[in-house]
Image (cartoon, rainbow, N blue to C red):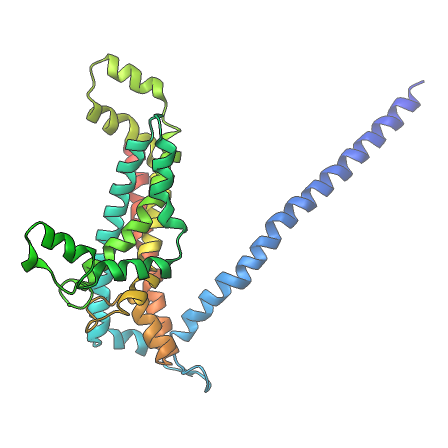
Amino acid sequence: MTAVPKAVSRGARGAGARTASRETAVLLAFVLVPFTLEMFWTFWPALNSVYISLTRWDGISPPVFVGLDNYLRMWSDETFRTALRNTVVWLVLFGGLSVLGGLGLALLLDKPRRGVGIYRAIFFLPVVFSMVVSALVWRMIYQPDGVVNGLLGAVGLESQARIWLGEPETALYALILPALWRQIGYIMVLFLAGLKTVDPLLHEAAKTDGATAFERFRHITLPQLRPVSTVVLAVTVIDALRSFDIVWALTKGGPYHSSELLSTYQFSTGVLGSQLGYGSALAVVIFALTAGTIVVYLVRSLRTEEAA
C-alpha cells in the first residue's frame, strides 16, 4: 500500500526539480543576456577608450603608445583649463538649480488640487522636446531683437541689453537657462515619485505637536527623500558633465572658448580634430569627475546614516 505514494512522491520531486531548473535557466538568461550586451556595447568601449587615451591616434594610422603624455599635455593646455573651469561652474549651477527647482515644483504640485495634472504636464513638456528644437527656440529668444532684450527694454533697462550668446562674459550663463528649462521638469517627476513614499501620518502627528511647515519638511520629508535624492544626484551629475547638444547647437563652445565644456572640447578635439588619443583622455577625465562626485556623495550619505 505504501509503494504507490512513494513513487508519486519521487515523481513530484523530480517534476519540482525540473521546474526549478527551468526557472533558474530562464532567470540566468534574463540576467546574462542583458549583461553580455551591456559588456559589449558599454564596458568594452569604455575600457578601450582608456587604452586609446594612452596613445597618439588620428583614427586612420595605427595608434602609437605614448603613456601618460596626453594627460600631461592637459596641464599646459589653456583651453582645457578653461573647459574644466567652465564644467565645474556648469556642474554647480546647473546641478544645484535643477535640483532646487525640481524639488520646489514637486512640493508645489504634490498636493491634489484642480488642474495639478495640467501643470505637471506643462513643466514636464520641455523634456520630450528635441534638444535641437529647444536650441532653435532659445536662439530666437536670445537674439538682439529677441524676447530677453525686448523685456529689458519694456522695463526701462535698455542699457542691459546685449548679445547674450555672443559675448564671453554672458555666453556660459545664458546657456544654463535653456538647460535648466529642460532638466527641472525631469527632476520634478523624480521628486514627485519620492514624495509619494512619505508617510502622511508623520506629518499629521508633527503638525499636532506644533511643528512648523519648515520643521516638518526638514525632519520628515527630507530624510524620507534620501533614497530618491541619491538617484537625482546621479542623474544630475551625469547630465551636467555630459551636457553637449545644447551648448554645441547654440555656441559650439564660443566665443573664444568662453562656453567651452569638457564634453564639447572632447568632441572638437577628438572627432573634428582627429586627435582621438587626446579626446579619449578628456573622456576619461569626464568619467573620473562623474564617478568621483557620486562616490563622495554616497560615502557622506552612508556616514550620515551610520551616525543617525
